[in-house]
Image (tube, rainbow, N blue to C red; front, side, top):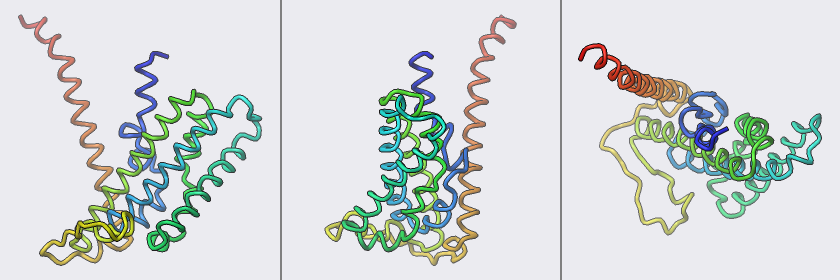
Length: 228
């Protein structure tokens, strides 16, 4: 496989094969936690750390894994890193940990992490596995942040509320408060489904426009040759 193809496949999780907007994986935390930008960002960062750490360890140990036990080993590795992240977040970000609640331990059930371990880390060298894990985690975080921003703005009329939970009380930036009243439905579960549908629709629209532009640019030289 050429280096360019390998790089493209490694970074596909960032946009082209985004785990949240294309594969529709990890939907439970995506819909439940994204009541604000800060909540989505915090869970996205935690998930990214677990994905990168899991890919690294699986790639390093891939030659010594028993094929029939690989899924069990993947789950054990993921659960171990999630436990570490859960304990660290509880120790250093206790208030944020209380807000996110059960959804940090539930990172174990995120199929995007298991899919990365099975399709990438167990078959690729460490460098490619780390890059793929980081791109997938960043793509998932982007979807969480986008949906959290959308729901917070529409549902509460604020932005960056609760930032001190993530960066500490020393954060000098005050939350942005819009001079409008929010729509409660955006902060409730139906708003999460509507917001996700909007993000998926926007991504499909952008991909469609890009494909049309590429196809048009590819056909243009042929037309010039036919009609000198």
